[in-house]
Length: 513
Ligand code: BG6
Image (cartoon, rainbow, N blue to C red):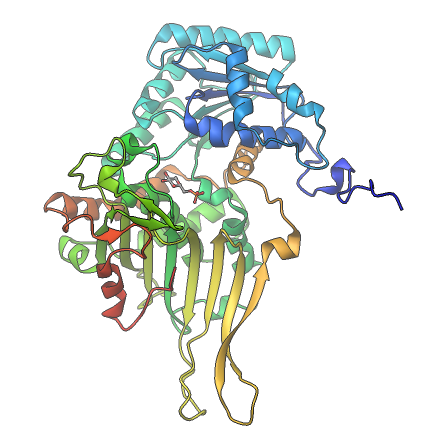
């Protein structure tokens, strides 16, 4: 037998990710195209869509930013962020074609002239490439320039669809505001220029396969939903732990902190998906209507309850994965006496019929022992233990969002032997084992959805504001007093001791990281 037979099928359509129906032709204008997010996430996501035949062959990307750059420089910079090898089964020529479809535009975000030139460029593309006038604006700039871009797009006549058959949409990156008031202001600015149906507020967690699977797991199966309530569930823990530190983002992170950066967005998204009622259909209006009800049912914090139920922390020097790392205050760009929190743990109550009395414990932090994002559902103990002397751990269902994507259910089993001893065991589902590698990048899923006009996995104006209403009282309370002595946890640990005490006081424990 020949040793050259490839292991992987070369048939391009063997991968379920290929799009049978490519999207509409369009131009994507990426504001902030010279930045880190564009290079690391957005352009590779578009490339991924291109090689899987999800982008229309007639497509243009115009990178808009202040930095002077030629088209070739932009293509070169983009290429540096692309995967080194082509995905098996994909057309290798597509890489070059994709890069040729990129162009760069040097402009000022608050200069009307730039938008006039932009309008001309877009018309040129439409005419030369027959793009049908479809336009997607992606705001990936620092958030303080979002209002300028939106207003100028409006004034230049670029916000309205070009014709009755074309569409114009805008994706706005997080953070959407830095508190409730600024989010409301930004919504007002955006909605003066765009209709809500054109606006796609992105939270990349919603594009993760495992996060979407939460809906399938809950509402596509009959087995767990009857148990998914206060009668059977003792508590829910949601963890978004990172072992990375602040990296090169101190300028942003110093004014954000873990509460704004992770809890207000990603962790509350997970909370809504775990807690929501079944939507009438899997469509944008129904899903988003149900999600916001959870945010509206969370018991609001008061100053008194913030001190009792919210813990903040900041990492000091320590060891992560065997490497010594500096503390947050020693990171480049961080103030030596910074009071920014890099860790938050909190207990949340959801006041509705399903969840009355069931605490949701949420935590997120940087420079923790291990990167793990998971949702742990802890069930109540068996009502009466007939196996004398045996202490059986309550059943837990772990939804592992990343990095070991999967779901596992723990229960007690009889250990082999003459005596009745009960040991904890698990039933495991592993994504990689069941489906193989190659799930789609979150950003690719979300950009694809936006081009298709599906807003199910994007935030609506009211839900962003509701998430801030939850966070605002905590920010207010913290604003009134000095933080605990920082740093209060070493890098590479599980966070501050006060986070353990938060659960310990109620006879519960965090799942070890
Ligand atoms: C971003 C935060 O939204 O999410 C970052 O700004 C964080 O601070 C990142 O590191 C985590 O995303 P992921 O997909 O790596 O879990």
